[in-house]
Length: 314
Image (tube, rainbow, N blue to C red):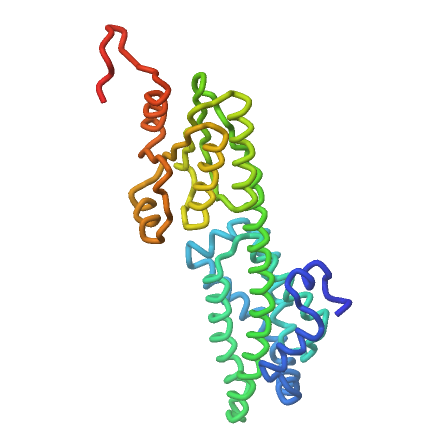
C-alpha cells in the first residue's frame, strides 16, 4: 500500500491486505461498486445541499457548534466535507481512498472531537441521503434499498478506517502522558535529621517503582535516615501490583536500616487492599502525611511542644 500516508497506515496497521480484508468482510462487491457509480451523477448534485443541511444541524447544537465558532474554519471544513462525500460514490476504493479516510480520523482526534458527535453526524448524513436516493429513484423504487445498502457498506468502511486512526492517535497520546508521568521527579526530602519523606504523585508501574526505590535507598544512605515516610496521596489508584511494589520498597528500606511507613491511604484504598488480599502486615500505615510525620518524629524521640511548654493538642 505504497501510496497510503506511511505514518498513518503503519500506525493504524492498515496494509494493502488489511484494507482488502475489510472490504471483503463488508461484502463490497462489483454490484455495490456498479450501484455507487450509477448514483455518482446525482450524488455530485446533492452533495452541497446535503452538507449545508448537515452543518445547519451541527450548528443547532451547542456541543457540536463549539468546534466551528470561527466562520473561516466552518467554510473550510464544509468544502472538505463536500469533497469527502462526493468521493463516496466514485466506486474507487484504492490506497489513495484509504489514505484520505485515515487522515480524517487523525483530524477528528487532533481537534478532540467526541466520537458521539462523529457517529451522530454520520447518522444524520445517512438519513438525509436516504431521502435523496428515494427521490432520485422515484420511478424505480426497487433500486432504492439496494443502492442505500451499498452506500452503507462504504460508510462503515470509512468509519472503521477513521476510528482506527482516531483510537491509535488517542492511545499514542495516553502513552506519551504515561511516559511523562513516569519521568516525573519524585523528591526525597529531609524533614529533620534521620527523617525523610517521599511524596509520590502519578501512577506507578514496574519501571517507575524501581526508580523510586533506588532514589529512596540512595537518600537513606546519603542522609543516614532512620525513618522514612512514603506518601501516596497523589497516586491515582492502588491495586495489587502497586501495593506489592510499595511492600517491596518498604522491605528494601528495612534492609538499609530505616523504618518506612506509608501514608495517604484512603478508606476506599484500604478496603481495596483488604479485598484483593495484599499482605501489609509488616508495613506501618498512617492515615495522612501530617500524622505520618508526627509518628516518625515520635519514633525518633522528638517531642513537639508549644511556646508555653505544653504539648500540642492531638
